[in-house]
Length: 232
View 1 (cartoon, helix red, strand yellow):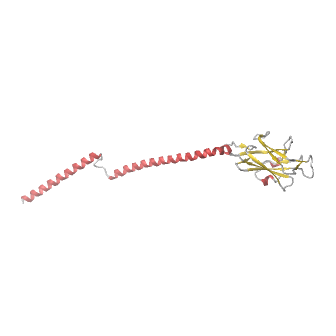
View 2 (tube, rainbow, N blue to C red):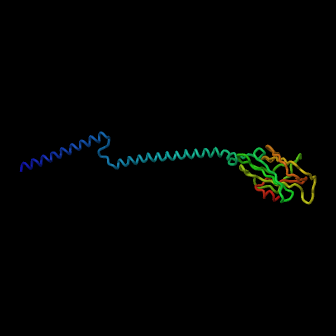
View 3 (tube, rainbow, N blue to C red):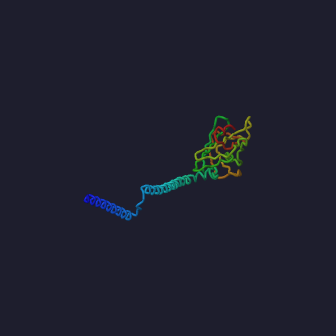
């Protein structure tokens, strides 16, 4: 009986010693790793969450990166838009002249006694076609009369490649042929924004063969379409 009790006591003592030894080992391991012995896995998850917060900061950095990328996209747009700004956005369109346009003169069947003048913007930026073309046939000293009733509501702004039109009435109605003659050349001058005088280089054109005009010749203001120009 005493032998059983002694064995039981010895076993209990050994168990206690083993438990104390294990606790000491765990404490030494925690001290070496710098981790508190009471830390729970959730605390580690929170740390990861803070890491996720770093990830969020990284995401914000990514947003900044997108902003930078957007800025780079904007910069080329701005550079490319420099022409646009010069053309229209900042109100500094060039004035249409012989330096940035080409012209074509066409004889039309309807209405009779009319020519159609077309200018096309050949530049890299928009240009404004002010007022009406200032025309001189051959060596005439004064410009051809402008039809005031053809004045549009606003100035025509021509993007690169776009055109403006003006019709030229060659002679008066009812046989009123005052000073009639055959013309061979046409010089097209361009009106400035101020409306006074002319500006820039003119264009010189060869008229269709047999173009007959008189002192009643007149020209419309610049129009946005050929059909609008030819209604006068």
